[in-house]
Structure formats: structure tokens, C-alpha cells
Length: 524
Image (cartoon, rainbow, N blue to C red; front, side, top):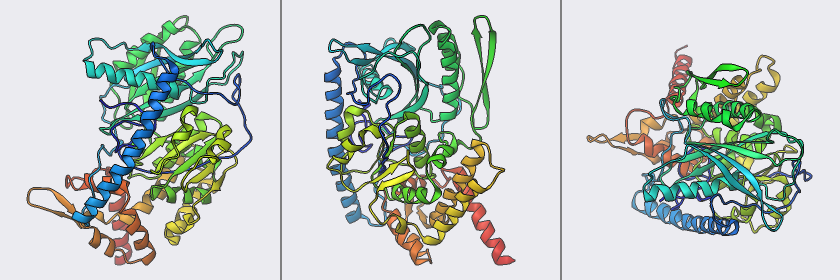
């Protein structure tokens, strides 16, 4: 059965945390700043995870050791697949497991579970995260389904409290929102949307995490749901259940559409809560404003270049919300392609040493662990400091990866955000930023449909050599020759070869608009 194992790459035989997307990919980034602990906890401490009666140490050891084995298996397996594919058919892209599109169908359930994770004191004086509430409780599961659920529920507490277990009760705590992703071997992903807050009451208390597990990637929508959960938590846990029940019985709306939830609150009466999906489905799991607030456009481009070539990226920040928002934003820059390798927006403290693997990854690590990260025997990686807004470590060739002309055009587009007083809403920022990077891919690879040869039985074969030769610019051709060797391009083409009907409608629309503009310029 697939197992929710932190960080294991998709091509391994186990699931791993990643964004709401499939198969292989890479990245790295890092951050440096003075250590700053959240209220009520020390800067150091070791994390634990174990709902149910399992011992914490055993659970962590099991997850950690399986994670390491998965990374090693994945590296060997991918190398073998790439080599054999290249020998047998150099013009054909090797197959990769997992689905590729992150667009979700209307009518699905909003979520699979709501769990509450609380800190419980152990005999040695530390605190262990434990699931104290689960909705719904699933009955009559088959043996395999039950084992899969148990593995999921073991992993969740680790990611709800990734920053260790040396906590102390407090009277004040600023709630924070973040997310994590667990990916199964079949390519399916479960996203954990988390709100860490201090329950109402008198005296000192420990924070707890409300975590919604869903296969749907829509961060803004689930943030609003968590707002409603937090509001009800301040009244009573009992008020949360009917709201979540109503949500579970409601269909997930289509892009641009809304669903209305009726919810009764004591002393307030019945409330109508409207939840709306963004019109552009490919932007519903991203907040580019968070990235632009911490990094200048001239730093975003080398990060994008590293991600496009599937390198190792490490991002550093102290706040969990900053890490998850910024890493989701970087992954979203790759649209219509998807980050496919190890992807962990917030690496649990107990797994820090496991991310220094030879395969591509994109991970977020809290700033307090910077020295420990630098001490790891790590291969070349791009390390980004989100606190100071700078790159701490680079391979050195990042500014030479992208064609210089297109780099300048993207910089101009991104700087327009800083200079345009008419851009105020997050939706406007998302559109502006996305447009700059989508246009880059339109210019670089938008001619790919012309280089898929279709057989009589309806299957397509991508003609890689002709595709690259069709690019007249030497600098652009140099970049594309590298890009076509990435897993994200392989997955994209694999989907394109299956059907003459294009997969990413928005991207196809932009390709058509670009060709129409070129034709208009030629005719005028």
C-alpha cells in the first residue's frame, strides 16, 4: 500500500510530501537569520509523531529510515530508467509514474479528514504531538485501507508540529496557517491545511493544530475554512462538527463558482458562509504576493532557473506560513509544468538530515536549523534566505541558464508590480506574475504540438530533435536542449502524446494568442 512517508520521491515505492502535484522534480533553497523561537517554545528540541498507541521514537525511526531507503531506491531507479530510455529511443521521452494535472473536478468532497493534534506531556518532560480528534471516523475499512489510514494518521502529527517538541504552556500565541503535502506512489497527493492556535481558556495553555486533509489544492479557500473553524473553536469544539459535516456534504465548486454552507452558531443564529474558487484554477494554490514581499524580482529569476532544471533548492525562514507560502509560489512559477521530485514545504526537525540526498528536492527549513543544515554533507544546492531576502549559496551559473533577452522581459514584467499603483489585490498580483512566466514557456516550448507525430491508432510520438532544431535563437535552443531532459517536461509530453485534445487549456490559450499576435505583426 502507498505510505505517507515524508519526502520520499515519487518514483520510489512510497509516498512523500510534495506540492499538489505528481511525479519527479527538483529544487533547493536556503535562508539565514538570527534564531527566533515562536512564543512558548525553546529554539531547540526534537520532534515526535505518534497518534494511537505507537511509541513516538519507534514511529519516527520507522518514518525516517523508510524515507532514507526510498530516496536511495529512487535515485538508482531514475538513473536506470533514463539510461535505458536514451539507448532504446533517444527521441522518445521516458515514462514516469503519477498524474500531472493539478486541476480538480467539481463535485468532489472538500476534504477527507479533519484532525486536531495536541501536545501531550511524556514521562521525560517533553511534549509529543497526538491526534485527539478525528472527523469523520471511518468504519468497516478493508485491511489494506485500514493500514493506509494508520500510516497517514501516524505522519500527520509530525507535520503539524515540525518544529520540535520543547514547548511550554503560554497565555498568548499568534495563530499561524501553513500546509504540507504527502504523495503516494500512484501520484495521488494529500494536502494538509493547518491552523495552529491557542485554545480559549484561562491561564497557560499549549497550542493545538486543526488540520484538514484533502486531495484538493486550493490554499485560499481552505484558509477561509480554517478561519471558520478557529472562530468556532473559541466557542466550543461541539460547534465545529456541524460546520464540517455541512462542508463534507457540499460539492467542491467549479472554477469561478461558489458553494454556500449553512452553519448554526449559539447566540448568533444561522450563518451562510460562501466559499468561492478562483476563476483561474492553476492559481488557486498560490499567493505570489508572499514571494514578492520577501524576494526581489532579480532574485526570483535565478531561483526559477534552478527549479526549471530540477536542481536542489532549500528555503529558510522561521515562520511556517512563510515557508509553505513561498515554496508553493516557486512551484507554481513552473506552470504548465509540475515539480515532480521531493517537495516538503516544512521539513520536520527530526528529518533534517534526510533531505541531504543526491536527488532533486525543494524543501523549507526553519532558520534556527541553518548551522545544522550547513554542516550536512550536501551536494550542490541553491539556498535562499527568506528572512533577509538573499541567496546564501548558489551553484554559480544560475544567471546563465535562461536566455538573457527573455530574462530581461520577465524582469520588466515583475518590476511592473512594484511600479503600478493599480495592482492591489492578490488576484491581480497572481495574474501579473503568472503571465510573465507562462509567456516564457510559450516562447520556449509553445511549438511542441507541431512536433508530435500521430499514428493511425491515435497515439502520438514526440519528435525531440525536430522540436529543438525549430528554435532559431542559439541561446534559446541551448536552454531548451537542457529543459527537454527534465522529468517535468517528460511528464508534460507524456500526457500530450496520449490525446490530440490539449491538457492545459489556459496554456493552450496563451499559445494561440501568441501565434495570433505574431501573425498580426507579420501582416501589418
